[in-house]
Image (tube, rainbow, N blue to C red; front, side):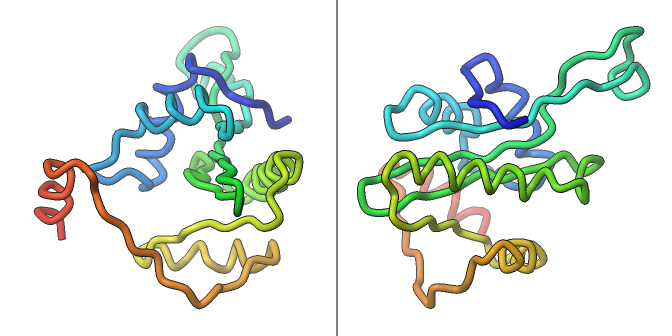
Length: 158
């Protein structure tokens, strides 16, 4: 089941995003998470499942964040970011479940279209999105850091 996550999930989400290779040195994943869950036009959706003692190192099953999708509506389009599923949980349909929930959230927010970005270094995931009906929009995404220190950090990492 997909739920809206709260601030208490920030650390687990940031760890999942790092494990999934979504974080860059100039990113602040916990800050991104907290801004999204505190915004009026954004949220972070998640799948929380129980881990047995073998996975958690405890005698009792414990809840664990198994996947996320950050959503936001800007009044023109809906966007999906930070789609991640724990490596050991991949291939079980959680990514598709999260994307369906993200689309539902954005539809309810009034977004007529959903967009997402895939880094060129993560081309392997493009097939997943294509199977869900996503297609290359033949556009380029340009960006600019408003914080000169973050721009310097990005430049230092190529």
